[in-house]
Amino acid sequence: MDDFLAADNLSKRFDGVQAVDSVSFAIRSQEIFGLLGPNGAGKTTTIRMLSTVLAPDGGDVEIGGYSVTRESDEVRKRIGVCPQELALYPELSASDNLVFFGRMAGLSGREAKSLAADTLERVGLADRAKDAVRKYSGGMKRRVNIAIALMSRPQLLFLDEPTVGIDPQSRNHIFDTVLALRGEGMTVLYTTHYMEEADRLCDRIGVMDNGRLIALGAPAELKAQVGDPATTTLEEVFLNFTGRSLRD
Ligand SMILES: Nc1ncnc2c1ncn2[C@@H]1O[C@H](COP(=O)(O)OP(=O)(O)OP(=O)(O)O)[C@@H](O)[C@H]1O
Ligand SMILES: [Mg+2]
Image 1 (cartoon, protein in one colour):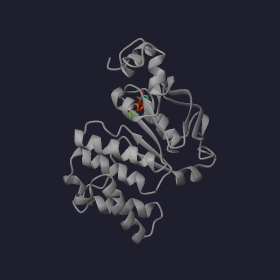
Image 2 (spheres, helix red, strand yellow):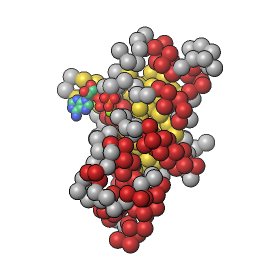
Image 3 (cartoon, helix red, strand yellow):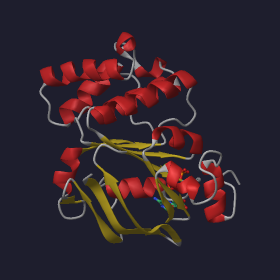
């Protein structure tokens, strides 16, 4: 399988904190790749560098064959980003939020409206499309945020902790959406600190801790490095590689 993303020795330091430390990994086309790690591990900083938001101090990334540092415009045409913090206009309806971001991505008004309707259908919000987003639950807002990231019809979608603090129904909708997108040929990078979620959803996983990538592989491969893959959990994998529990 081809690599769609290849990160080579990415590093980023913020006054005194080595947030990301020489991280290298590849994501294959049409794979759901999970970036796992506890709070402060460096997941968001990594995503921000991969998605051209933040310049690395060192290293580079190729996405679809283009360099994030030297060809960032080409990279931006190919990616969609759903940030960890919600980025929505609460007074606008879900539909109007999507149309706005679609126009920003260069779509005509007609294209944006048609794609907004399709995309809200896909995240299970078609029946609430005309309601102001401020009336939505946290999980529904999160699904609108994902829908916005899909408005540019990306080949690679970044989802930064899409399921934190949301209801089970929205969580299941998000799982279904991510799996359907992969089925249509999209590549997805997903961050979470829920190990069981990554186990269920991701084809391969990179485990981060203190800015470093400490393990990389399919869930079953990582478990096999630690014990019997049938009974070992990813929590135990994390404990084995770091010497401490994920929830400490
Ligand atoms: N803009 C910034 N300025 C200073 N320090 C930062 C900045 N962004 C991140 N950091 C620090 O870098 C480290 C990694 O943070 P990052 O947000 O990448 O972690 P994370 O794995 O996404 O954590 P979380 O699970 O809490 O979202 C942390 O120590 C954080 O405090
Ligand atoms: Mg984060």
